Image (tube, rainbow, N blue to C red; front, side):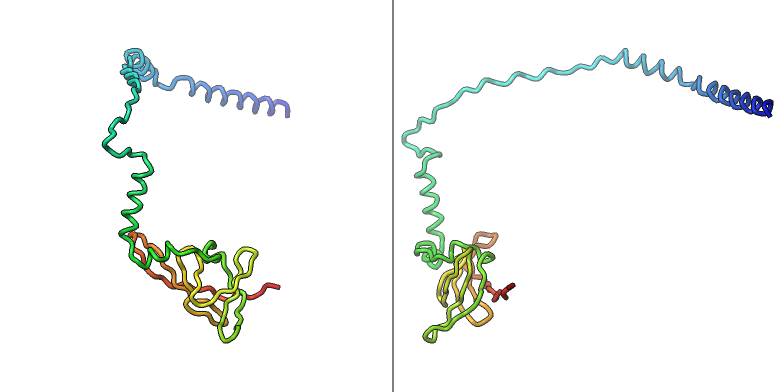
Length: 181
């Protein structure tokens, strides 16, 4: 039994020796020599970057022209843009704002409606406050005006700017929110 074990061990060592002998020469010595020669001949040339030019500040001394950074130039531009607006938009921008106009529509909830002396009011919750709104009142941040109130919703017509900069009316509604309690 020991003799068989020795024979197996000798066979394993013999196979391992043959395998290692096969790994010794890979036949690529000439390729490695050529690569070393090419590396030795290669001398990279890097062009140095020019140093930056020194900054010399210039004064803007044109007293007969408008300073491009003055507030008067900005005010002039705003006035020109305001003159292009329709009278309807101008009237919305120049009137005093109502309390519900400080909230975007998605932060206002209709929680009910009430009829007082024949006029229907919507009960609207914005933030932690409850507001009573009627037809004709303003709401939201896009010059929204309440056009109709019924038991389940408030119809609104907003005046908003589209992607091209034109102003137009768009409808919106606030639905009655069911109580979660």
